[in-house]
Image 1: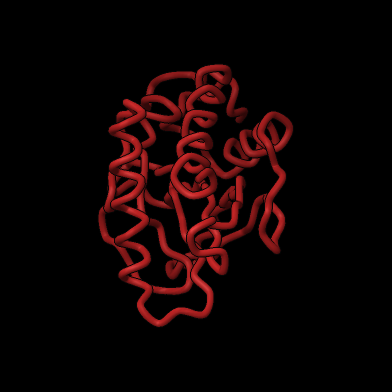
Image 2 (image 1 turned 90 degrees about the vertical axis):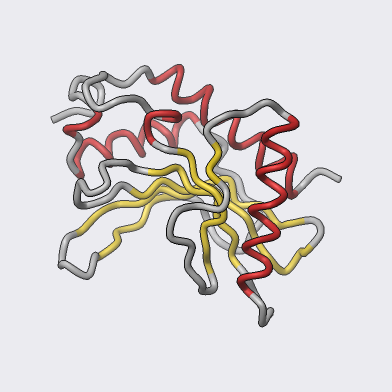
Length: 174
């Protein structure tokens, strides 16, 4: 199976890995954090393996010990059948992680409205606490495409660049 010829709703791990290779070639993989952009293998509680892609790591200007970044993490199951593009914050050396996550959600929600960017869900469904948390998401239909569609790579890159610019505007530029 190839991500280029398989309907998006039928993608398997091999499709996602091929898609991630395409992204690594076509996106800005530089980072201003102490980690590299790329892919990682994630083991689910059910014993499944999925692959995540993370990039565009930036130090948050107003809180330089924290990093913000984007990631794509397909679900190994189809309930709900939506792979999110995640906006994440990596928190270092702070006690009140929920307040940091909530502040990130507020900032991105306000800025996306000002920039007329639709599809941003902030705060995300099922927010969690921890050192790395998602503070906003974009549903797959808005950034990648619908189940029966074949990927339009140029449109996906345009969409991802919009979200990179949004992250930059919210947390890097002052």
